[in-house]
Image (cartoon, rainbow, N blue to C red; front, top):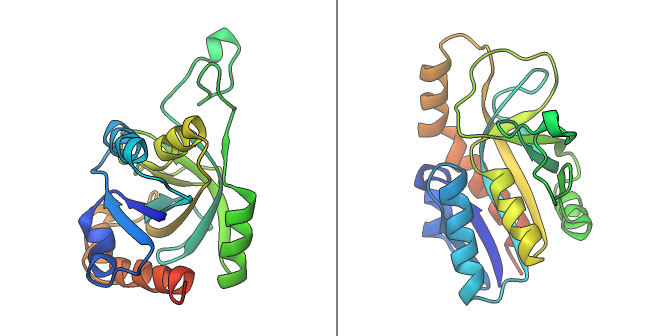
Length: 197
């Protein structure tokens, strides 16, 4: 089976109503621990061929609200053992950054050749302050990569930019996106990836 993982019902409400045979959609809840626990529990009792994480993400400029972004690599922004010689975000015994599976990336690009790409930062805080470097940010994705790495299951992530750090009326803009175009865009991505499988 192919597993599609999302954090919130608001992200995948249209997917759940139109499930595709051979593709299972699960919700983890918000935050790193919820994401890791739910995915690990599911993988313990099911045979999964590949994991696709779909969801919303914040972003820095030059990304814009509504952009669709293929995650090439993922890391934590709130884990720091640099004092002991590790890279920022690196957990001892694990890679500096988790990589999306090459074969899954290729499949995504075949279906969505114009998709943007980027680095995903994950942490247990909803970021709003403007940053200089370019990235997208969420509260679950890297935890999913972490579990997938430990379980040796291929993973890739596609995010829709819901808000840009430092934007005006940040909260109101995010809620408007969440209520309207966000779920529709993710449903279109889901159909492109898996329809006709």
